[in-house]
Image 1 (cartoon, one colour):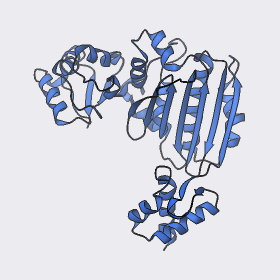
Image 2: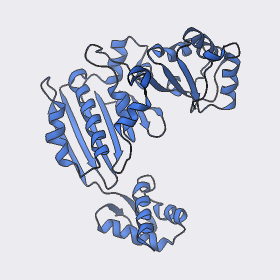
Image 3: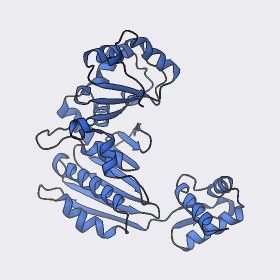
Image 4: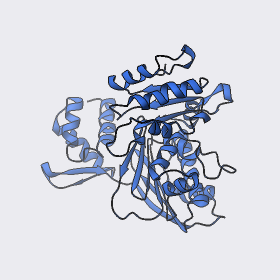
Length: 352
């Protein structure tokens, strides 16, 4: 088998092994149409190279990525703690050689999140962890403060911590508008491949490409906030292209577009049917020029909910472009019913 083909198989194995620790051989044989013996030989080589771990025997064998770097740095949270110094002196020496775009992503995200912990967490200590494998860079920032969802809820006067998560997902939300724009968490979550915030009994995850989803974590939760950021070492994403995705040349490339996962509005299995739910979703929409509503995970909406968003809001703010994606037939039917009386300039639509 030629070198390029072998390289493709190795890359596939390394990327898939985390989700398929027990059936990676079967998965790879089906993907490439090759023998189990050949895949097993590649896995043995990866184990020898120190990139993969193997435990158990024969059919009970489990594979995984071997951490090449695992380091936790601990600091006292004081006003004079400088995030750029922690990055330069603590994190950078632990990183392998990276493409410039990946290095920039790591620097931007780590310093943004650590700055938030220093100035807003209300904690006493922060731990910064670095986790490197053959395919990815993982960065953690964990503080012992009040917790980001609780802090946003209290200082922004929101109903509960779930409401805080919904507002964070929109962007432009800050508890200190004199010193911060509210863009840091929004853009950090979108420049990394995977991003997660754990605070209290709630966990918010974002994955690129994809969207946001909320997880309940019942039981006694540790104090503070834990944020995980992960990016592939060969990612081609750049900070510039992500910023441009949510900017407009008409506004000097300022942050004027957002994408809102509508499912974050739901509590448990409840349906989205009321005007009060719609108004909660619409809060702060007037700060943007374009809004993309992502209905992934939403199977139905009520007439009042649709009317408040797609007729009332669009009529009141015709200068704001409202788009929608990932809608099933039932949701589209309700939207079309709501917009039947709108003029052409007011109509929302799917993005071009």
